[in-house]
Image 1 (cartoon, one colour):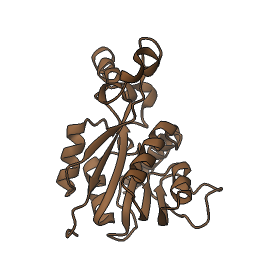
Image 2 (cartoon, helix red, strand yellow):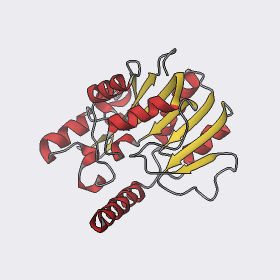
Image 3 (cartoon, helix red, strand yellow):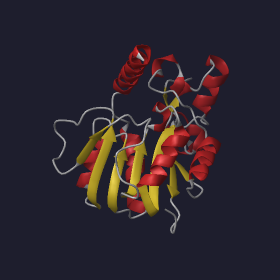
Length: 235
């Protein structure tokens, strides 16, 4: 039993180290994509920022005025400057949260699933937390870009899962993986959108500076978003 406790403690320390290494933030390009999706879909109600990190996008969810309840959960502690009426939970996202079933109309999971050990368990938790008809917006590195594919061929792994990203990034997914995971959890088939922003390793600059407005979509975006709905009439 003592050995089990020591091992469990080391795992928790490892996860906290990985969480801290990630920095607790994502890029403005990713946040902008999520914001566009929220605005375009006219989302409202109760929202959960799942894997909120330092709470930067959580604050935007509060400021945008669309949601009457904003909650956040992360392994990192509540940021000291977080708005008081945002509910912040601390927890290991590899395990179920303490929220009740069907607590939210929208879940935002920005750049978090690649940090977690069991994406299928996470997807089932998202499904449990969403009310029928609720929307999931998740983003993750796009492992079907030219940059990611080239890194896999020449360096042995996708570009955002190389040594400099480990152990923060541990779970690499492509669109087919995401679709299967969400469908297995009970979600409707996801739609995918892309940041239209990516890094060109050959010229060491963004793709749009190399080929201009053609640098869009799956091959030229470092990150993607999957948008999926929990069917109505399903608990």
